Length: 257
Image (cartoon, rainbow, N blue to C red; front, side):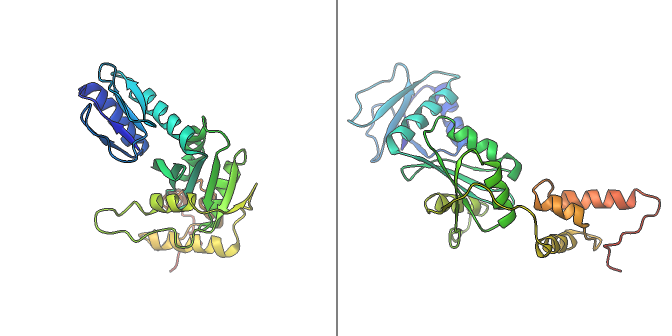
């Protein structure tokens, strides 16, 4: 656990903002106060150092150095806790969880196209990181495996990884599922087939019709781009509408009369 213990407002603001942006778990204490059980790192300003218990490391931060201090703290945690494991729940906006020794160091939820960049950034300084991808969304899972083909990737059975969400925490399901996926071993995979089946393309077309306000279904070309993660269903519908309505009275062959 990381503890922020400083009375310097600028240092506190910079460090806490960076920790929150990265989704890193932390707590705060007054300088010199008793530390909670499980403390591994204390971040404080230069003039606030005090003797720390054995096994607790200090990271000194100055105003404007929040990112550097947090990166140092996370690096120390990774070195102490063991192998870095990244879990990914491949939903429409995949959840990502970065763990070391079972401790959640960071969590994210980003568009599919940004996942590989986030994973590489978070594992850049980690020796032999392991990426675990849930298998629940076959096409998205396949794309992630192929995007991360320079990493060690396991495909994990994600059955039962999404917990029940109570009031006030809706929207966290993909991130919590990613944590559970990171903690579940899978099968090492180098690449996966991303060619959608006719049934998968039809399901995407059906989703587009359900999302449309004018009973419109996208064509197969756009459905393939949705399957590949290049477009969302909404973007594909907009492209389909522009292509059909922008012509000289072109007929919409996928429209139900």
